Amino acid sequence: MCILIFVGNNGETYFNTAALVSCVQNFPKNRGPIVGILKGFAGLSGAIITQIYAIVHTPDDAALIFMVAVGPAMVVVALMFIVRPVGGHRQVRPSDGISFTFLYSVCLVLAAYLMGVMLLEDLVGLSETIMVVCTVILIALLLLPIVIPVMLSFFSNDDESVYAALLPSPRREEASGSVPSEEQNEVILSEVEDVKPKDVDLLPASERQKRIAELQARLFQAAAVGAVRVKRRRGPRRGEDFTLLQAMIKADFWLLFFSLLLGSGSGLTVIDNLGQMSQSLGFEESHIFVSMISIWNFLERVAGGYLSEIIVKDYAYPRAIALATAQVFMAIGHFTFAMAWPGTMYIGTLLIGLGYGAHWAIVPAAASELFGVKNFGALYNFLTVANPAGSLVFSGIIASGIYDYEAKKQASQHLNSTLVTMPSRLLGMVSDATPA
Image 1 (cartoon, one colour):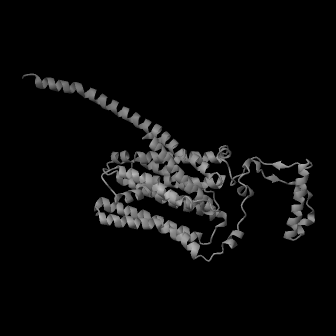
Image 2 (tube, helix red, strand yellow; image 1 turned 60 degrees about the vertical axis):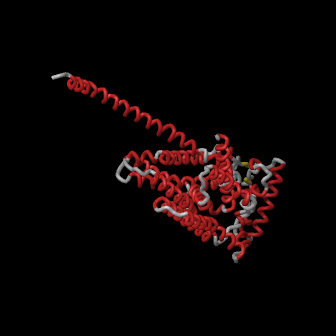
Image 3 (cartoon, rainbow, N blue to C red; image 1 turned 180 degrees about the horizontal axis):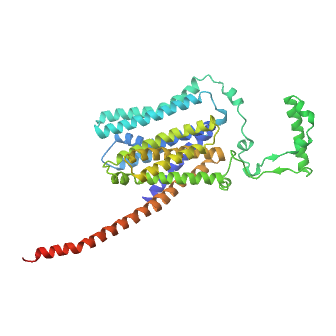
């Protein structure tokens, strides 16, 4: 069983990495929306599989395991030749905004539809025929995004070459993937400014570029024989393609890692203990808050990528601003839970769900912007280690330690109160037993 769980969890990681890395490379100008949409669908996947299983439900539990094992594999085999990097820098279209808006609308409709079906199943109960109809509608909603590539392929009037010409050409290191990135150090020839004639700047642009290219060629030749000192920088800069080892020596990478560790760890602690927390405050139905935090988590995964993209493109602020805002919301949510005020469960669930979901939309997009997309798979999967590490620290050590301490404290207080009242009880029993 442990081996099967190990293989299953790693298989999910492969699916997630392939889809996320391919989409980020294909849409480098819309990383936030892409990550948000993919993470949002990942959050809804459990409800989608449950709804599909409901129409083929049998008393044999092995049917569910068989469907979970075979279903995703069939989807992957069908799409393995389609989902791949296709040169996203040459595929920017003016209709991209409308396409992503349509995808966001499908996500919201899908989430609302699933919530409505689950509520009807719990409150009213649905017949088998109605369940089949609901599942067919669900599959239609899942297939609805296919309309976008079909429309762009057969009915689009956009001249792709015109928009591709307006974009910068891909870097040389992307085209020549066989050359190690360590050997592609940029040569900074500051000596061009020293030897460039003053009248070069007065020439037409084409002639000026030609003269500067000739000067650079001479300097390269001189550098080859040692006549000119050439400055070489070590490693890539922010925004260029990093390997995992190169990123691990950067403070930005570890700031992202520990931010995700703190955010996801504290969020998982609340999610894991939400049932006990709701019962301690007098709520009998704890599954309501579990469903609520799942909905807020999904919505913020979708909205977090979109809002962070607005912050980057429209206001020219770093994406980390959105991450810091999400952590502020989570801090307020934790404080609300600690105070145990009336309505704490509703407000805290809202804030924690939004903050936790935002982390998984913002951090991967920020990592791809800082460290490139060439080795994004290795970078992303290393960052996801922060999720179980944070759960271990916050839930397994801090929360459980506080719980055990309070349990022992209350047990000792109960024991002391029992010992104090025991003599009076014994005297009462003796007096009752003594004949008058």
